[in-house]
Length: 185
Image 1 (cartoon, rainbow, N blue to C red):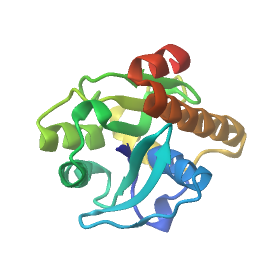
Image 2 (cartoon, rainbow, N blue to C red):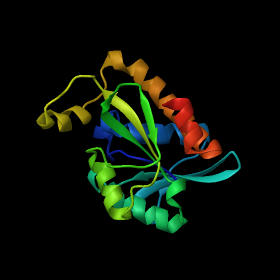
Image 3 (cartoon, rainbow, N blue to C red):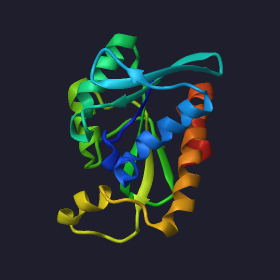
């Protein structure tokens, strides 16, 4: 199960916080699949890659409650933690960089906090997509930054990162987290 984090609604479509949705949308488009409403608070699309059945999930709970949808979908599909990959934005990583990890803390990301809380587990793989500027910003400015759209000059790097993130997901599915980490970190 591949989960992309983001916020639903057209006003959020092109924002930095929706990078997870952007990656998941590209995966679905490449597989010529469309999202349908799930039996919980998420949209899903099913596909096959490298001989594996894959479900793509886009929570509809808004970022800070992503764990509700992820717990529901992971139980519905019987997903082991090692087979769950969460794709999301990280402002602590420079724009365009990717970081895959086998597990760990929420790193201050509210969506990840919610997922870890609801799953009561932090041992699932994750793919962080850099949206940062490389500058330290006051905490009070973070919310407006992640909810802002990418600047025109950032779009080529953003598109490249989204494509690379989709490639990293395909490597994760076909060869596992360690191979994906070795190739994309």
